[in-house]
Amino acid sequence: MRALLPAMMFITAAMAPFVASAEVDTTPGPGGVFHLKPGVYVSKGQPCSDPANAAIRIYNGKGIRGSATHGCVAKIVKKVGNRYTVDESCIDTPTGAGKRTTERQIVTVSNAIEFAIDKRGDVTTFHYCPVYQLPDSLRNLGD
Image 1 (spheres, rainbow, N blue to C red):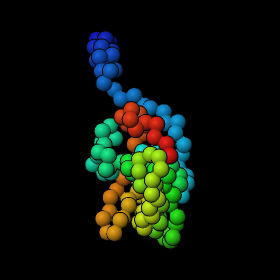
Image 2: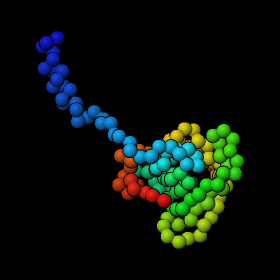
Image 3: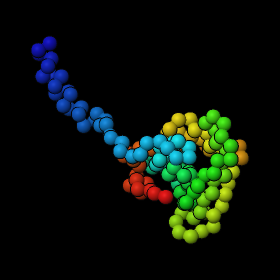
């Protein structure tokens, strides 16, 4: 065993750059209208590191917005368990002044970091992306 110790120490030291480091999440915990963790979500199958614009949703505790809207507010019309029927009102432009539109949708919250949106039968599932996995352009999105 003593003969193996130097070799084991070398292997451990050589592998150190490849071992995943733990990142500390200092972002706010779950809350708001849907009891989700605030932040950036991407649709299932999309990488957090480089998601398509259409796959991005941002939850700020008041509502869920896409990449082409802002100022979204969800008004709960009906809640049954973890399923919310809401009227989601958003300003229909990425920034600045624009027309406010309202859309009825069903949001099903699986847990604090995953939800699905059903828009007229078209269901898409989204999952939370930790900040350290996001590209720089998505790290400081606010609403």
